[in-house]
Length: 216
Image 1: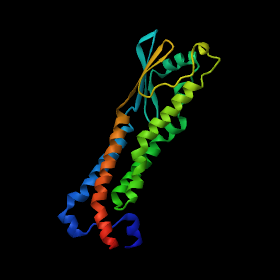
Image 2 (image 1 turned 45 degrees about the vertical axis):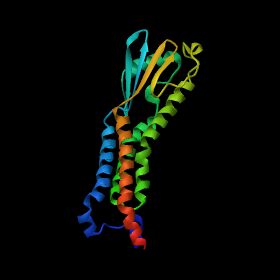
Image 3 (image 1 turned 30 degrees about the vertical axis):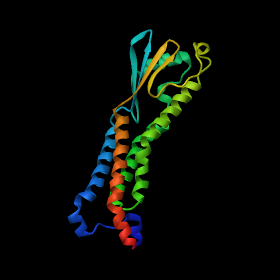
């Protein structure tokens, strides 16, 4: 086997391509679908926080995209100021500034996996597979950081114990109630991960026999 075939994998024999075309198209189609879902997620909110307070019975909403926070951010920041929590816009500044570049890089790696017919395709796809977990882990880090490091000089600091806002579901902070929900963008990224995993399964089924035959 040539050195480049060890990295890129064997090329598909023409006779086999004409005979079992779908065997090789299925993994490529699934990987493309996964890439498109991840790309689409950039334009959708990933996470939403609804905060209910006595003066806002209808609730205040903040939506988190990969690169920005939108919604009633200013009003929520005013309420958070009273309990000593930092403004939402100060969280994950580096991550949000680099998010589009990072996701595009992940997408390019996943596209590369389509053209690689060896186990290296798995390593190229790992960032896309793990991306939703990374997002949730980073979000948890910042929510914990903000909730556990309240400003003791805040007006209501003495009435509030450090806390960790929930990533999903309801939370209670003094007279404030929060409801966290996962949004379309996050579900799209999770679906992309699942579809890419399925695509890699069919990728292995398609190309492993050819690899083994080359080694004989």
